[in-house]
Length: 185
Image 1: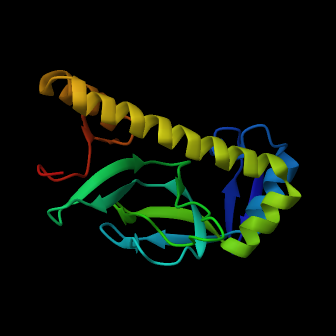
Image 2: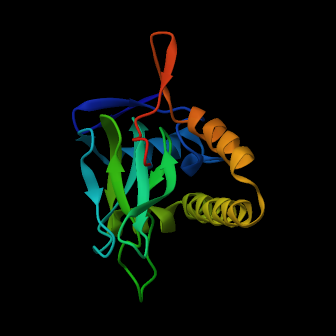
């Protein structure tokens, strides 16, 4: 099923994103029809930590790195998101600001909703809110596992695990898989 977002058709499928898991296609179409599309240039910063949360993004193409600054001022990669990934999340009423920075690794396309629009859609479609909570819970679980890895697993096996994770966001380029990260990252 295709839905017009702005002037562009967006293909809806069960695989579009975990955000739409279990939601009927007709309801997904209603949610997506309230979104805008945006193009994001390679290395463009989407938002910075500390900024107010004004929108929720759903990546439809490309990949994004989510970082926080370490004590030494160097960015630490928390996660990499590919197509279907939710970039940012709703803040609580008390704390409506970003806790991380998001930057495009390559050219990206995303759907985005203003926070009030997304909140209204979440009330209208409770499965949308449930799915957002699941996504946030999965992020927490991954961070807990990574913390455990850093604390208890030697460097070589950690490196292998990370390379396997990176395969999920890489893109095919000729006979290789391209991952747009620097050596330091």
